[in-house]
Amino acid sequence: MAISYYEFEKPVQQAQDKLDKALAKDRQDEKHLREIQKLETELEQARHEIYGNLTPFQRVLIARKPERPHAQDYIKALTTEFQEIHGDRGYADDKAVLCGFAQFRGVSCVVIGQCKGREVKENLKYNFGMMHPEGYRKALRTMKLADKFGLPVLVFIDTPGAYPGVQAEERGQFEAIARNIREMFTFTVPVLCSVIGEGASGGAIGIGVGNVVLMLENAWYSVISPEGCASILWRDAQFAPQAAEALKLTAQDLLELKIVEEIVPEPLGGAHYDPDTAYANLGDAMQRQLTQLLKLSPDELREQRFAKYRAVGEWEENLAEQTKG
Amino acid sequence: MPWFEKKPKFSSLPGAVRPSNVPEGLYEKCPDCYSMIYRKEFEENLHVCPKCHYHARVSARERIVMLVDPGTFQEDNSHLSPVDKLQFEAKKKYSKQIEEGRKKTGQLDAIVSGIGKIHGKTASLAIMDFTFLGGSMGSVVGEKVTRAMERALAERIPVITVTATGGARMMESILSLMQMAKTSALCAELDRAGIPFISVLSDPSTAGVMASFAALGDVIIAEPRCLVGFAGRRVIEQTVREHLPKGFQTAEFVQEHGFVDIVCERRELRGVLARLLNHLWYASPKRKSDGNGRSRAGSERSSKKTQAVEQAVAQ
Image (tube, rainbow over all chains, first blue to last red; front, side, top):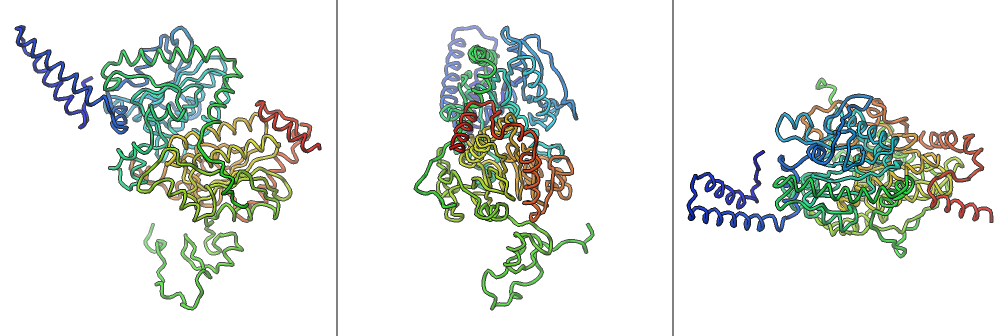
């Protein structure tokens, strides 16, 4: 798929265009080769300049690129023997989430992935990565099978949020998410989550309670999207870049806040520039973490997960200002 | 809807109709039907409009007075105070908003917790206050709900939460989101220990709080016509361009769809809670055969706490 460019990537696009044009010429002389070399250096420079120092909102934009590898791509690249299963056994099969069994580097696992598409038809099929209640229930059903059969759970998070629609409300979106979160605390198998793109709010945590949470370098994870935050707090979605700054939603922020355990590096400019490297990086990090988790006993796994989330939060024990009840 | 049935959005009475010699604060306007209610009557009626039955929002302190036997409420963790860890700044600084919330409510955050008795039956209580930053859940609210549940586990008493919230607190970003996980983790512990949890939803109960502990009560009660849902009305209308059905996301609507057990008038709430506390716990044969406090909780921490409490009681 052709690479798309945002406004801030213009210099990279121009350098790339120049290089492509030169390469298209059918010439072999030394002058031409020197020209190509020069253009290649210019492209490298432009990429380092633009991508070497990304703002939080630029990372959000990169995380949303349609050509970025999605959950189904990671599952395809990192697992073998994949067998998808469908449906929540109650209402429907939500295609926004892919569930099934697979082998990951020699370990039988359950995989759960929020899917996004590259073009209109695919996007409609996956509902832009926004799950309905039946999607959360399908994921829970699959994870319960993992717990029953002692299989580790590998979760790939990439969603702009749980679907905000009339039917989703009618079928209990809040109940589905709440139940998933609670039930994920009961599992005695390793749960390894990876935020590969967008981690928006309840839609993400609804399948995201892990013993370990990994995060790709350009992924974002927050209580609300920058646009949503801007339209509420600034009363104007145009302030999304400021909101992205304020929300502290980058992988680096989340590592510092001890919400994620590890940042998985991406190729310069984003995973889509070199998907194979992105797959290998994530696969290696997952394998390393999973190997450690598999050393824990079932009870230890549950307790470790509980302890991790029990400890989250920042407050003061302000005895001086105690209110009189 | 025919025009003649249309409810006027604003009172058709001009402001000047109110007699100028009426002292300020003697009357209150119903936020829903805009009729003037004698303040004392409104208070005696538990802030429910006598004309249209609208259940007005009440503060956490008022709620405690309405629910708990007089003199039995003992507040705990009142010293927990929010911090601006992320140095969050939008149009206003978060630290300033905390300050304003404090001045407005006299509370350190959007929740009051403690133990109290309802018709003589002890429960651990966590009661949210919408007036403090829209009742949003940040670290302090999450921690106090969590501690209220831990106390219920340790003392083997039921836990009741009353929610009044717009959801997770944006200004604490990911830390707020993780409070959904933390509070739900405790709900899993309550399940394992067999301790009852009753969730009471008041207006509004939405978003991140609704998609975590508030939806996980063994029994879920909602006040009439209160807003209950996940996504905001405006968000749904804007992103999906769908027509919202009449009464969408009201307590009655959510009950109709199977996600709320009881829709209950405010004056009935105390009695309903007392009855449930009895059925689920105080009259339950399981609790009685349980040696009155022997811990079945799996987590060592809570069982240790229970032992400590038992020893304290024995002395």
